[in-house]
Length: 468
Image (cartoon, rainbow, N blue to C red):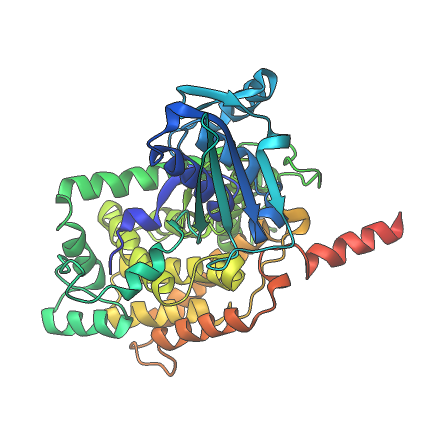
């Protein structure tokens, strides 16, 4: 497995890992790899398929411009995005990588191909740099989910490489399937988080690994806190109001009241759903989030982690959080390698479904469950999201995405509870359900895969228009 925990968990900005983070990274990489940048007189970005169909709602236009300017998802300040973009439009030029100016406006420099797709993935983009001598440099990139990108032909070249041509795996416990990881566990006597730690420590030291995980958790906590304290309306034109802050205040007032008649046992799960919704409201507003494994599903893991740290009363929460994250990453790696985490490729089962499985497995690990119970929890998490479509209304990561994260977090806790109460034996394996998810995504019609051409995206708008 050629992925790290920090590939699955990346700090960036909303509203989408595949439509915002990926295009920003791709635009910047294109220019970095152009040796003749100082001779450029123009630049164009053409967006295809899902990127074109839902790109404006997902801020793909903003992301590409920021990437051409040299900004990174983890480095750009969310509060400065609009002013940076406004400066480009006002000047009628863009400084490529912040150093070389060429004429540019969003209207002329971005081309939207809504009825065409590039061959390797629905999220394709073609960058063109025009040089002073009239020649052009072109390159195609694909944003394949979770902020991962690859250039045209890179994925095929990697698959076609012979074993002799590939570098020998340096990790201690190589795995491409859960069966392989479970076999390593039986042979070594180690837990899944311990094996993932050993693999990560081939690349970096224990202290660096822990500092990185702790920082990811810090950003997640801050995102929840900011979302629970921020009211107002989300951008994009649907006039969706933030709800997490108001509902959180109501929950706290009820707790503090002498009248506990409305204090019900399920209120703890209500709070978990609010944690997740708070994160995804931040994401929808273009705020700072952690891709986990995508932005559209970014609320589930932070919500379940906070539930673990605050409601499960762990004796060693720091170690528990680290074990949670390492285990969750292992599940995400398996899903990305053997299926997909891209809503444009496989539907929301690959985003919310995978995040639910990651959170469920992480919670079991943090609570001391066995490797077999971890595998069981992850399988339950995905199984009950199979077939979930990605049909965002207006191309915005708001409806049904925000509530869907709240539901996914609650499902993750339920899956973990079921697994912990069993002995790890169960009928459907995680590997089998991941393959089922892949096949289901392949069979799913494109209109249900992040195009806003089917499902809620057209039904609600059609109804609204009919009423006008």
